Length: 254
Image (tube, rainbow, N blue to C red; front, side, top):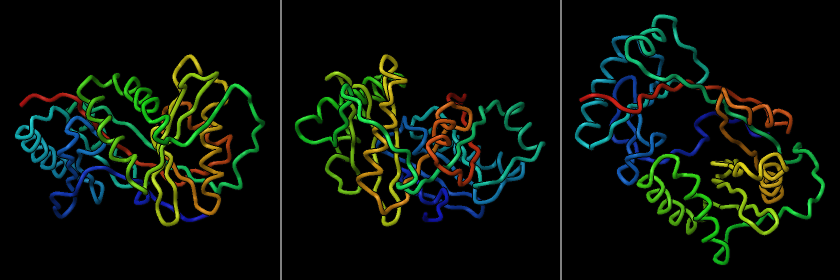
């Protein structure tokens, strides 16, 4: 299995500014997408360094009409007690944790066939089904966000570095995911199964298609460090490769 790190994870947005201790990533086409509009610290900042970066990002987002502030901290590094307390108690951020997992496709469990489940690559004949599923899922973040993401999915559909997969249960759209194809890795991104079809083995069989399509690449994904899917990944033989802390404030005062 290929050795991987967070550098293997695909990020939308472009690096537009770099300082001594941070990189600013911005996505002018998706201002509402937190994951592509943020500051990435190169080293764990001091309290003063965090405050200066926050001041910069706040001023930038004021000009672009963005209401959120997001910071990503160095891979596999924990906060000092003082910095964490400052970010949470004095700056009122929500702090989260992601975990990076990887697997050799040959290590993924063997799955039995279930007649009710159909997994397909997204093509012209089922693209609208895929778009509708994703749109309904993205509505949680608002209509403008969902419409913006639809355009991203349309662009990715034409990009050979992306592959979209859809799942049907008894003929009805039940779940989807995207994969990002790199030289040595394939990243599973945005995997979901709508609530009424969960716990039927659909997510596992979408992943199995990815394993079958890319048997010679290392399959990677990110999991929320506090969500239950990470336990599923462990049972499926994924191996944890690292962790990373994030801080998010969804609305700030100018």
